[in-house]
Image 1 (cartoon, rainbow, N blue to C red):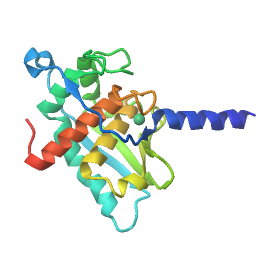
Image 2: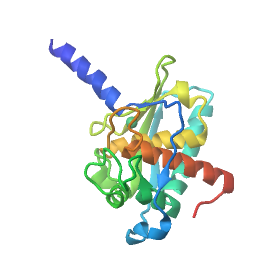
Image 3: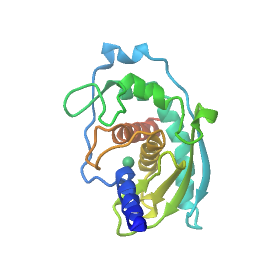
Length: 217
Ligand SMILES: [Zn+2]
């Protein structure tokens, strides 16, 4: 019986923190930069320190895409545009706030994330995004990736998606999952206004912009 409850909890846990594929592209909305909300907040800096990579195919193509995404993520999250968007984010009900935000304002969410304080070991390596990536393959699963926040800093990613994902999509997923490692969760995959989903979408758009124009403001 204990084992059964354990298994159900595990399934629920995986489900709760799983990032599943959304069919429709979510439209992001922001309050105007001119309102000056972001000006009150110092711009942070995070170094992306990818750890162990495991489970990737021998060809190395998919692993290389993950490695290539690190410098893209670093350029994105340290940009002023990222700060502006995170702080000026407008939810679907028109408020300047995220859902599943642990009671934090947009400014506090930005400042919290830019500390680089993962639940596991984050205290001792602040200023860094620390995570390991473990690749698995489930052809029938809609789960792109999942984590166990507070237990490990491993981001589990499904090769079904990673094998065909662009670097922007991989960057977006890694940012989403890393935000989980900082303790921000979400309800279902429809919780588009949650911190992991919304900021994951912001990261994807800015990664595409960075890759197409070579810089961000
Ligand atoms: Zn998630």
